[in-house]
Image (tube, rainbow, N blue to C red; front, side):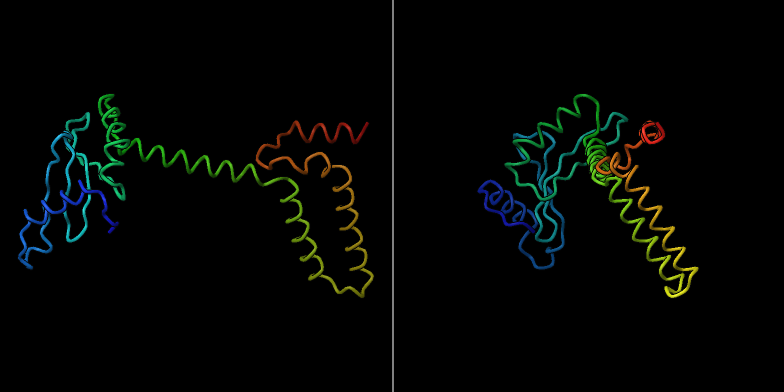
Length: 189
């Protein structure tokens, strides 16, 4: 339960407790109170938790509640409630719009995360994995292992000389066939 310091919320809480009664058996009883001056806005007391919600009718005629979790009455009445009323007036469901906004924010965060992974990051991970795998596969003292390690290092050298300088800082998810065509065109001519 968040701390209540707003005098209006304290009045509402007191009214709800009076409505519920002071009998210890009523402690788990849920009581609701419609707030005057704010059409459709209710306060509810569940145990010791005070919450606010907006009751409205969706476009399909179904009644539903938009719960305001963790917001004070002043925050609700100054920003959340007017925004939700505007959505309802347009025929939109505030709950669905909030879900869409969360999904868009998550997608944007994922896209930003992807944009931070560069070609160089992926290359260095691949190089480390390949070296570890190759070293664990061969005994370093044999001629066969010497040739395998030499060939591996040649591949890395060619890669680092011709491809890595062109793509190092490029986000991995934005690389296209055009990038590769340009690298091969300049390397061959």
